[in-house]
Length: 423
Ligand code: AMP
Image (tube, rainbow, N blue to C red; front, top):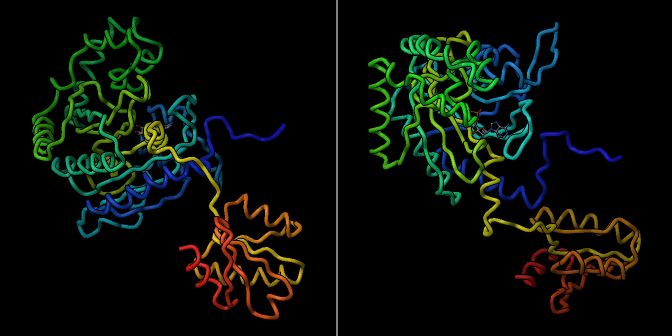
């Protein structure tokens, strides 16, 4: 039996990679316009970074982390998300030490032991951005503006931006108490997951996608009715900055997100084209307390993570973006008559490649006839046969494959003559 990929992981093959590169290139073009610099953090970190940062009661920490023993039994974990590592790095390298606002973005793999399904994998990729050191709602709107620019550059316009405020450490505990009280008489009718969340993470009940739960959620007290004045002002300011930017948004009181560190603003960009359960293309929010949770000073933060697999799924459905994979075509195929000529070809190929030319040489011992056939099959622009005569005279014949036109070339000027012939 041949070995296949592990469930929940996937190869990205030539022909598909181009779309990934397009997205990554657009990100690298657009994000720096908003002041973001790229950061790369390790694939694995100490486990407590995530248990402290994301929260022990979250699904990720409870059941989705790939952990392994590190030195002296200290546990390490394949990163399930990028925000905690970025904040760890920010603190470790004192990036914000002069009060500077840091804007950082990343592109990379994440790992979560989830049930694989369409749009949900165990190894997946995220593009994320974090602003550390700012509490401003205007900056929050600016990040959303950056996202709309990225998506429209990629040709996506059928998405919805959904925003909410989940309160802060002053008003949320109060809401949680009210929520727990209201849940008591109803909880028996909620799904099993919601029932266990009453003990671990009751806020997450609000975004349960089970239809019967959604009906019950409508009967629960609203989070917005418990927000403190500061949270209300912050939320109103965000909305007015979104208006200023001309960004359309929808308010959704049930948008609480799966990570514990969010306070005040949470948001998602969703699309109907991904199906009802995996409809979030990206999500994010404000996490002002995360730095302190990781042992650092106060450093308010705000960011998002976008799922690349979901974006690729959306974009690859579009005909104009489908690329059929074809191996790169050689500009010149150097055919050889014998072993001595092969050695000559190898050196000439190296020189031509240094000039930026795409060259292929055959090492499989094919006859000249088979080499010519191969060159034809690969779609080479030009074929050149090298034997004793060419080597001693220092002169070659370049044969243009599309019309059979042949022209002589001095070996030392092969690259120049080739480019003239195929231009
Ligand atoms: P989160 O880090 O959970 O806030 O998720 C942010 C985004 O990452 C989601 O909106 C998805 O697009 C993507 N994402 C999260 N988990 C997965 C997964 N298991 N497979 C693929 N994409 C994911």
